[in-house]
Image (cartoon, rainbow, N blue to C red; front, top):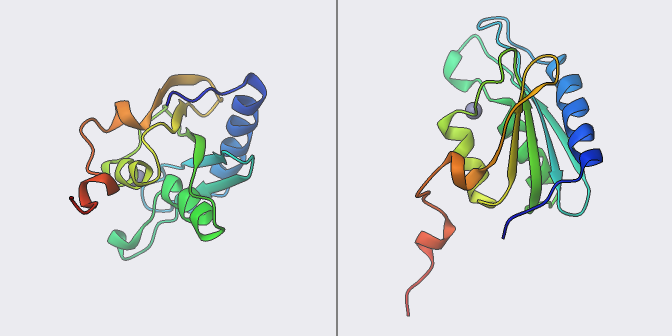
Length: 139
Ligand SMILES: [Zn+2]
């Protein structure tokens, strides 16, 4: 079901993602990312990318936000805002993690000044997604 985001919710998400971006730990890529996730019940979770000297264990801002929410019991999300220098799009791993918790989650991509570059949803970002529905028992 198509979700609707109010203007004040969009503002809150963008502001929170911009603030989270300031906390990014990205000494290697120097590509700071901030995310903010709004659950359907109104709870807000922020995330930033956290890199590591052992590069593969780095984690993206989007997944930090989703994992914080899920670990607090929030699995249904209205929208996520992601802020990067150039309005970059979530990586494949983050798209898959977002898809796990709902293809209808709205995704807002903004640049470092908070200008929205794209507003879409997970279904559009990850067409033909492999989801929990694929693993449901038949019959
Ligand atoms: Zn990612």
